[in-house]
Structure formats: structure tokens, C-alpha cells
Length: 494
Ligand SMILES: NC(=O)C1=CN([C@@H]2O[C@H](COP(=O)(O)OP(=O)(O)OC[C@H]3O[C@@H](n4cnc5c(N)ncnc54)[C@H](O)[C@@H]3O)[C@@H](O)[C@H]2O)[C@@H](O)CC1
Ligand SMILES: Nc1ncnc2c1ncn2[C@@H]1O[C@H](COP(=O)(O)OP(=O)(O)O)[C@@H](O)[C@H]1O
Ligand SMILES: [K+]
Picture 1 (tube, rainbow, N blue to C red):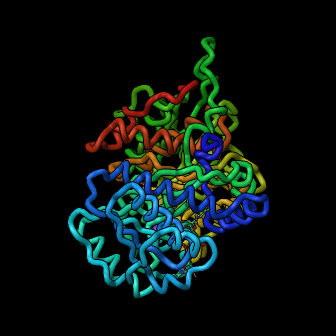
Picture 2: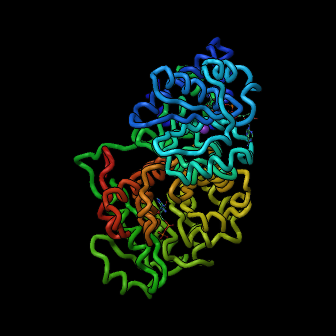
Picture 3: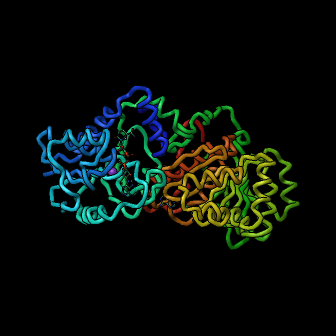
């Protein structure tokens, strides 16, 4: 069953709806809690066989209920177990009250706990139901546990992490391991939540996959399953034009490197031909550096218009090192009907006048992908960026809807979103991708995928994943140049 759900992301609100659906369909909710709590105890025993004592911190809701079940299961194995409760455990209701009664000892108050060497903390204070900043009564224990180095096994989510956004609500545990149920939540993958979950385990507590799938939106972890059906096998009788012709538009003579990186990445990623379109004043510097990538003089809109008559130009990258201003805007507006990656200066140029861009994209219906990092996102979408209620996923989705383009909202937790609301969160990127020119390489890979005929969402999602893999291959000393050399084949193409 988890096979079908393994890449689906479910928000806490959707999970609550799934719970209700499960209850309506006759599934006993306490049996789900028993599965959840037992899975936590099994994980604790597997991960920490050397623990001297399991300390279960239980909250006021069902997350606490999972904790009591885990405590009882651990005690049954003969392990040393202590339970500390936030608030009055006698006030628990429903399944959580039943779970509390399954544990023989009366829990002690939370503030009576002080971490000791040999302890393993099982954090069952808050999970999906965290609705506001963690209460003051929990602050001291969270701070003490985090400072102590005692390992934390989180139930569902580290308490304090918002399952919808990955934000820290006041403060949170830093877990070594998190056991969640049925499907990952956005907060497990979005920063800073991801960094506080430790390793993530998704346990099947027995809710039918169909019930989860019915409530889940079109939100996934970015894995090859998202796009591999769009990878054509390479025809032995292909020729270079069939493999796609990518054009990268270059800026002035002192900032040509970025466009060359995109071009080199595009060629390596499988475009059959790549042409760098350069203004006259940068031709000499570009010619001195290029070998397999071709060079074409394009100085102005008239020159671009003439070149665009060549329909064999399958895709374009505009932005890296291009320069911010009217020339960029004019060029971009001419390219909106084609397959286009709009990056860097191409995005920043529309800080003013974005409506014209968005209208043109909508009217021309091209396969347009925009690749903003946080700063560029805030320039083009200040209203969305400033909305503190939205998660990074929701921001990317709102931007895609508004612009009619596929948005690649970059960072350690890059989100790819389509105007339809479909979205994927990327998780394979190592932190050393944060190196100058890395984004230019990504733009070139997306361009190559577009040139090969992939639809914009799949072209972008596969490129983000491939960029992450290239980072892994390049290793900690990666530079943009070594990243290009580390781009590996995608199954079927390249
Ligand atoms: N998803 C599922 O199918 C299942 C979920 N289970 C567990 O149920 C949990 C969700 O349970 P709940 O909805 O009861 O939520 P939680 O147990 O996460 O917390 C909700 C309780 O805490 C209170 N609360 C929320 N934020 C607070 C704050 N900042 N300060 C003080 N009090 C606060 C709420 O009013 C509520 O009483 C999941 O995280 C998971 O551990 C399991 O029992 C098994 C089934
Ligand atoms: N901490 C990180 N972990 C993983 N990937 C990162 C991290 N920081 C940045 N990246 C990735 O590195 C690339 C940087 O792109 P960008 O910010 O445009 O840089 P540049 O303009 O130097 O090319 C993006 O693909 C981004 O997702
Ligand atoms: K928790």
C-alpha cells in the first residue's frame, strides 16, 4: 500500500479529513492509534537498543495518545520507561484517554523531567494538531532536551514544527528520527522543519490508500516517478536537431560567464545543439571560450525577431548575466510563445510591469518556466512573498497561478509548481549546491529538457532532481563548472 502513497504529501488538514473518512468507513480509530504507538515503540527499540530509559513526553491530544501506547508497549518489553505529561492527563478525552489507561503508571508533570545521560526522549507533545506557538509550559523542557544531546524520537512531527509549513512555532525539538503515519507532510520536507526531523520513517497504520489518495492534493515529493514517463528513449537514428536546439541569450561583455554555464549545462543535459546568442560587443569574449556551443550575433529585438523565424529553435534560456532592463523585457515578451526558462535578470526585469509578462504568457501559451531564488521571488511576487500565512509550497502555487508559468522556487527545499496547483518538493539537493553559478546550470538543464519536448512542469521537476544528483556526484568541492561535468544521464534520454 505504501508503494502507492510513497511520494504523496498530505497536509495536516487533509490528514484530519482522512481520519474522519476512516472512522466513517468503520475503521476503529483506536486501532489506528495502537498501530501508530506500537510503530513508535518498535522504532525506539530498533534505533536505541542501548537506551537506559525511554522518556515519553505526552501532550493533550492524540499525539500524546500515541505516546501512551508507545510507553505501554516499551514497558511490556521490560524496558525502563518514564512518562511526563503536559497538563492534566486526567483531562484527556476519547482515544487519547483510552491510550493513557493502557499505561499502568500515573504520568508525572512535564516540568519534573530533567534529561539524564542514557535517556531517549520520545516526543509526543504535539503533532498535526499544533495550532499555535508551543505553550510556555513546554518551553523549558524543549530547551533542556535540545541542549542536553539526549536523542529525540519524534511522533508524527517534532513538537513545535508546523506540519503544513515546516515553520517553527516558537521553538521545537530537534529530532534524530521522526515516525509519521501513512504519508509525509509538507513540514517534514520544507525548511526549517526538514532539518529538525532527522531521518523520516513513514509507517502504514492501516488506513486504506484510497482514502488518503482521495483527500490528497496534487502534491508530491520530487522523484523520478513524477516525470519518468516523459523520458523518451534515444532513437538510434536520431540527429542533432531532433534532440533539440537550445538557445541561451547572453548579456554584455563583462558578464558572459553565467550564460555560458547555462549553455554548457544544456549541451551536457542532452540538447542536440546549443547556441549562445550574444551582442556584438561580447562576441569576442564568448568566441574565446566556446567550443561545442555555437555562437550567434543578436543585438536587438529586430535581430531576435528574424532569428525566431527558425522554428527549429526549440527552447530558450534568458536571464543569467543578461542585465536588468528594457532589452530583457522586450526579448522576453517576444519569447513567451516558445519554450522559455526565465531566470535571474530575466525575472528581476519585471519588477515593474509584471502584468504585461503574465498576460503575454497566458495569451501565447508557451511552456514558460521561471526559476526565482528567494530574492527574485520577492521582487516579482512581493504580495505573495510577504504573506506570512502561506507555506513555501503555497507561495509557489500562488505565483504559478498568477503568472501562468511553472515556478521553480529555489533553495534547499526547491518547490516546483504549475498553474494547475500541481507541485513537487525536491529533497535530493546537497547544501554545496549553494555556489555561484549553480542556478545558471539549473536553468540550462531545464532548457535542455524543454528543447527535447518535455512539458514545462516535468522538464523543470526532472531538471531540479538532476541538478541535485549532479551536486551529489560533484561532491563538497563542487563549483558550477564541476556541476556541469557531473550531470548524469536521465534514464531513456540524454
Ligand atoms: N493521522 C492519523 O491517522 C492518526 C493520527 N494520530 C495522531 O494524532 C495526532 C493529531 O492529534 P490531535 O489532532 O489531537 O493533535 P495533537 O495531539 O497534535 O495536539 C492537539 C491538542 O493540543 C492542543 N494544542 C494545539 N496547539 C497547542 C499549543 N500551541 N499550545 C497548547 N495546546 C495546543 C489542541 O487544542 C489539542 O487539544 C497526530 O499527530 C498523530 O500523532 C494517531 O493517533 C493515529 C491516527
Ligand atoms: N542549502 C542548499 N541546499 C541545497 N541546494 C541549494 C541550497 N542553497 C541553494 N541551493 C540550490 O542552488 C542553486 C542556486 O541558484 P541561485 O540562487 O540562482 O544561484 P546563482 O545565482 O549563483 O546561480 C539553486 O538550484 C538552489 O536550489
Ligand atoms: K511530536
